[in-house]
Image 1 (cartoon, one colour):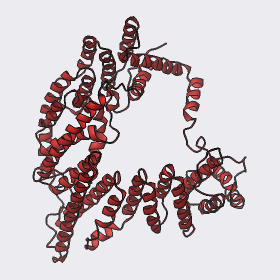
Image 2 (image 1 turned 45 degrees about the vertical axis):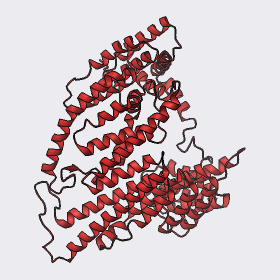
Image 3 (image 1 turned 45 degrees about the horizontal axis):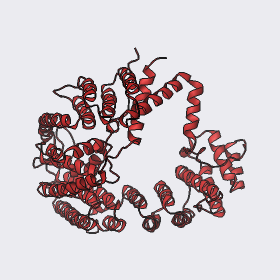
Length: 595
């Protein structure tokens, strides 16, 4: 059979095995404790760097994230940091509020300043302050979500109280829009992951504004933590629904709520089943509300076929037969056997993979065989690092893997696969062979990166070295950062030229905190894909890893790099994989040359 489908399957199998397998070395507990202690010292040093930043928005945003990381080490110190963040944020809003009120008092035409420009946009005083306030609202969300991961009361108090002092009419109107209400339920959902009781308390308050899809998601999260609290919240949701009028716009969230309630009732009847969200009578009331939304018709049902509506009628018929008959009469559907709600039917995954595998085996036997072969080869490769293969068998597996990897055409995925193989060989103790394998990866990378793809591939190569030979990763990254400094400087220079409104760059400092507030949180989270590599580097030599961050010329970029290192070590659920989980550092999407 052709090896090309096998190469495609193997790259994804490598990812799964690399993530699943972890071998902890001796004294790993002591080493980890020492590393975490050093990281806390580094965090405090970084906090000093943040205090020296020019932008208050940046100081607030970075400090909020550092406080969240400090929480895992010292809750008292972290809470003090969050308190400082809250005070600074209120001061920022008061500053914007006073500026906008001052402009509002000026005669028409005197506060406009320069409007427009060759890039367009409102560059007037009002326009600038309004955009800054909008960014501050997003920054408020970032802070609240950071707090919610650790302290529900602290987060909700900040969210509720931070806007009390705002007096400007335009700002108050902006605060009261629908997006603010949506975020409130998102915040409570975050709280539900750690404190179902508090989430229920806050969720009940939010129902006064009406039930939305976000409340259904909140109910599911509360149920996962505490079925009894979920039942209380579900009863309140149903009571609020009875006060509302329904139309087709409510169809989707009512469908989700009804299906979830029916599913939990079905499961509650099984041995050791958890309490259902709704009783039989409550589900009858919910079925009636759901049926009213369907009978209302409208655009919400345009994408549904007659079979879809009949399915819902069958479900409703279990609890409200008369309503089901009305639906069938209006939409002229034919009654079909009553179906039961289960995760298998309603989008669950309890047996979805088995069904998919069976379908593939039936429709594409060659692909199924390739995936079986890939799984076998992947398992054999992962045994190399744990020394579970005799030398002769190991050499055969390595040779077979290298032949298969050679068929991968996408360079990033090929470098990743080579690095994974080298990491396993190094884990087995054969450093010389690992170095030889890594030469294949190095040959695919431009030693003088110029564009973003070059830099990405260099990072992929460095990730491979971090797992197979960290001593070669450090100089490679030092050189790359030095080259990146030139690119970053050029980007900022161009940004200053175009950014007439000083939204991106102010006083020569990139405004991470003004990019919608979540910029820092998003970057440290999304770039968390680099955690495994940073963990390996920090474990090999923490001092050298810290020194890498100091290679960045710009202070705000330097702080961001430091936060990535701190997050990789102190963040929630962090655990380095000594085998080298380099595959998780990459975007998905392997492309094979099918010629």
